[in-house]
Image (tube, rainbow, N blue to C red):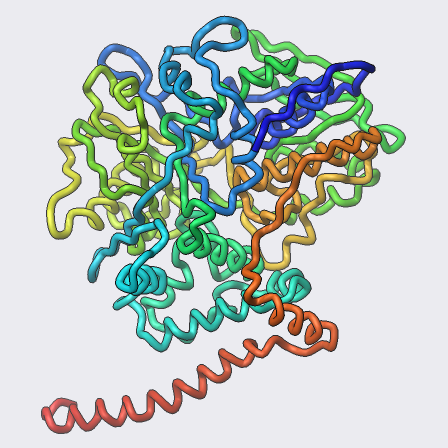
Length: 600
């Protein structure tokens, strides 16, 4: 992946205003600026990066801020768009204006890397933690020996936690997906909940916990009862591929705080390309007349003062989250671009993080920890082992480790206060998450103790409303519920000078993520390039499908055209019959055993 040179401006290029400085907005700015367009970005927060940004956390004993995140960033193997952009973003120890980063932290690390993609490091393991039974550590590199293959398959399909026949049924469901044509994915599987597709209601508790829920809710905040098979199935297959295919990384993380090693160098590069970036600038209105956007209004906050500004441009990229886009879309905009009319029908959920700053490092596992018996679907990363310059963020030696945790389930009661996460105060949230972690990790030995805690930090997007006795969330996350893909607009809407970029836009990735945001930005830029008659389009990728199953997919395409079901559609019915046959002898044997033992 090579970085194209910024095009010389031999003729006047169109002016493009980008509303939103998260991953989508910065990605659009990157592609446009490298092609010589005049780009201005407006971001409502003080820092660029959107939900991906890091920010100053609590102060250490010397008054310096500890690093904090919305939640840890992870880059699975199927991420190609965002990692391509990262590989085209050079690293410099100094900013374009000659200054260092705010604290100077990360500058030394950046000089050793050529691009921000060099700050991606691979994980080696995944902790599958439970409170009852055996927790497991799964390696994430490709298995080499028969024993490694056996261990990998056992970890994937829950080993002793799930009956073998149920594991075999789940494998059958995955094979059905692998041999299904695109039309069936787009139509049938989009309307089918994952819970129903994998027949979870007829299975054991272990099957439901480890396979139906699996890592889907923990890592992508999707409830299997309401999320589409199209989305979960595609992501599940891509994540499994990363565990077996040497050509891709199963999972990668950043080797430092997100802004230090990714976002800030990215912003520096965009400024070098001539992009103008405004922070603390909130878009408050989109003006539309004659089927065109005629201007936008913005509110700037500088030095405690608020100023309103009206901006006109040749093109506008709406790169704000879907909940913000809803507020900006007027009846006039809807009339001009009917694809915007259904934004209210797109659903969102919460996926927010906490950081625990520890007096001693606790490297729980060299990768993700997934806590299967946590009612709040917790996942974690122990950061120190991945941060190459951790001592720069250690609070003068007070902090030896950072445990970054994400909460993906906000409606189930916790184990301490008996309240859902969204009804807890920030302090209760911290206590509850800490206790859920201890219940999983402190089984055979004590891993976490209260005296390890130096400080904690809760995502500032969360705020407790004392009157309503509930948390509010300023940065919710799109979820792909059944049948809602048709409500998500394309990047190229019917308004000639407006395009959309954001993880809610219809993409191949089809998942609320940095990857979808980057892909949507590329599609938005391609729409502008097409209208400008510019053939230098942004590259787009599709998910890789195993060629082994291509003949079966073609056969299923014929079945689909003929209105016939996939042969795998019979599996749940066959399972029901199998259960009746197998449960009969089991029940008889159980009764005979009770008779011999004298039990009723």
